[in-house]
Length: 189
Figure 1 (cartoon, rainbow, N blue to C red):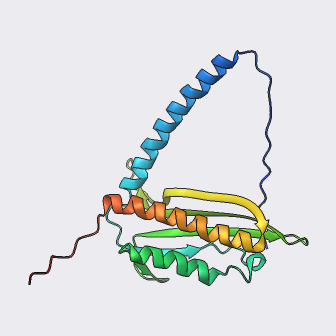
Figure 2 (tube, helix red, strand yellow):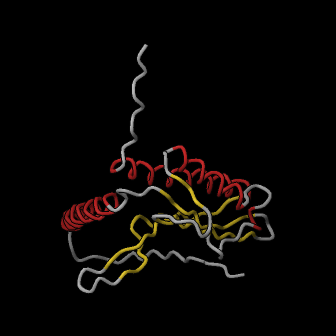
Figure 3 (cartoon, rainbow, N blue to C red):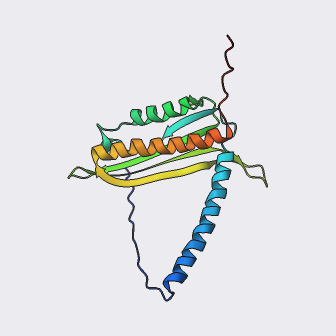
């Protein structure tokens, strides 16, 4: 079984600039970053137009054993599929025609003390075409969204379900922006 570990290192570097210079440079870079993020997000949202059916793939590298009995692959699949179906999108099985695939990867490792380190990601992949040569390929068109944390096994399972639900809701909100639900015709007496 393969495990993924992330080491986060923070470096504090002395600066020859004044605090005001650093603050202004940070604000300028954040403005550009926010503008770039907004443009990317708008393209991600537009790429969701017209999707009618999704396949849900829970990565083969996903490890649920450290999270059991508090979280299983079946629970994750049910949570995700139910949310997507409630938004009016068909969820299909292996081999059925679909417009895109929601990929979910979950990795967890439980220590002998009972602490559980975990990470997960969710993204949408669909077919894309290169303009210059009409070559088709699979591309990530929404996401990836991810989360990394540590806690008790029960807390890890609860956090994964909550955060994954939040990310799926974010996806569905973006989806509904370009695929509004059709209102039922008003019933006449």
